[in-house]
Amino acid sequence: MSTSTTTPATTPRSGVIVTDPPRADLDDVATLTDYGVATVHEALGRTGYLGPDVRARQDGVKTGGTAVTVLCRPGDNLMIHAAVEQCRPGDLLVVTTSSPCVDGLFGELFATALVRRGVRGLVTTTGVRDLADLRAMGFPVWSAAVSAQGSVKASAGAVNVPVVIGGEVVHPGDAVLADDDGAVVVARNRVAEAVTAGRARLAKEDAARRAFREGELSLDRYGLRDVLAGLGVRYLPASPSGQEAIG
Image (cartoon, rainbow, N blue to C red):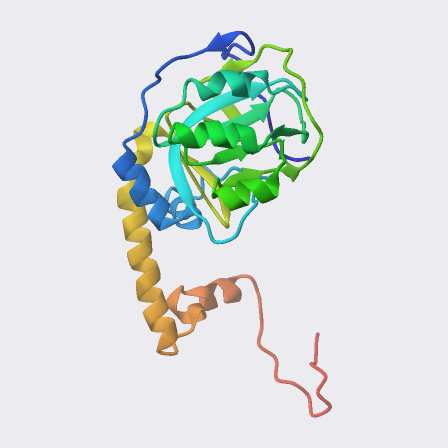
């Protein structure tokens, strides 16, 4: 599995529950959610994407919230139980483990408790289970696996500390967005920047969309003919036999 699940070296790896960290503005998070994961990722210089291993487990759903981060031991979901208490409306739970684990650490009972607290979804490098129930209750999840494998509750981890997923650091209170394209994190201190950059990105895409509908080619709009020429790419007419003359 390619997903990184380590925490920064300066972060305590166990026995820490940080309470009430500062959170990104929820109105700005809502705006970024509307923009979508791919747009925000591109607008911020192709950063923040949490990797292809974290996949949507439902179709056509997008959400965004402020991160409550959880670091568990493999096969142990004790710290998710501890994290529930730290959640408040507008949060999104982000769970990883100290080494790779795709056991089903999260299921419908957790979701029931989190819905009561106004949590908007789950992003995890682990597995989830009770998937039919999660879909039926409308609690969206993004995970590395679906697994019925159960877990224990025996090892200390951490809540609301920085964690790393897909090479990106997620701090508690950061904006985390998720949709069919995956999940992306926006650092709390970059959320306002992301709103502005995302708006500009959407305007650029709208202009390109109109141009393409009118027949303009992306090769011309983006100046890619010069790129091809610079790489030595040539246009060759087909021979009468239909075989290109390569050489």
